[in-house]
Image (cartoon, rainbow, N blue to C red):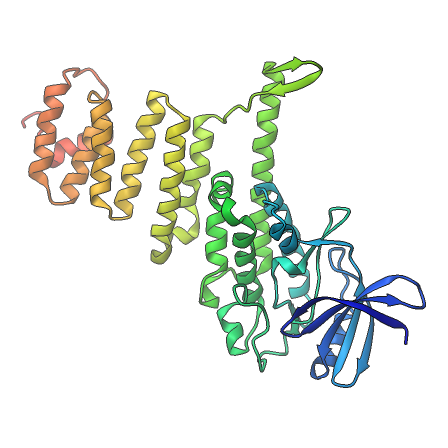
Length: 399
């Protein structure tokens, strides 16, 4: 026998994965055990070739099982690294997901398409050289295999339709979203702060109905690649600013620098850009998007203490709370701004219009009286919101 099995190194619903020695070549191989009723697919898998997939070496049949012999990757799976205490950074997660989507886009582009079916951290192998591989193709199926007798995949990662024996492109997309969330672990909210748009990607990937998810891995990959570019550009701009401004010190031959926060409008755009994602128009997504935006705006409050920044943030928080139909919270944000900045005409106007929308015109009129009492500077330029409020109350020149 050419392959000598040394030990079991993994197992799943579709069989076991073994470490074996190639007795002819003297090297190690990974051998995946697959039920013989899937031997047609096992043979076809030998034709796959991608730089981030272990090379398919051989195919062997023996009784009720067939064996797919693959290149053995030395390293640790992302699942193993996580269990050992590794906390993945935002950069690592973005980099890994871009690689994963590239592999899955390749598989889905085959004729017939290949659906991987069991995407999880334990099947993502990081080699000793730092290269990520997708391993263990025991659950993979081809596009002509629309229905399966059993659920292929792993609980917590498998899409709902897989429990009905169905699998397609969106099933792998669902699992991708689950993997991003699991890899982020306890670091999830910190990562969302660093990559705000990632929340929407994960949410859309993991929608229960297939039609509501992304429909192609190429679409997901394009979004993630753009996120990686934006994050990289932001990091490079900070480094460039430090170098050009001389904002560093050398002590005992070691260079230290203080991290410089981005300009306020840049940081604010990173949060508010979530409003412009097409998912925001879907009712079931709206509250969740607004909740993430609220958290982002609150963090900016702690980072940017300048008066104009605080004004902008509180107005946005109030408007965001109104979108969530949290009326009391909306009023609290407006009242907070009035308390600290009673001369700010814009907040009176925005708050007054909100009260009118809520059917509280008498309260809006009391607010107008408060504005007249606290604000005597008629020369201040008024906004369109202020003139609208004025018109709604019938104040104007003859009011």
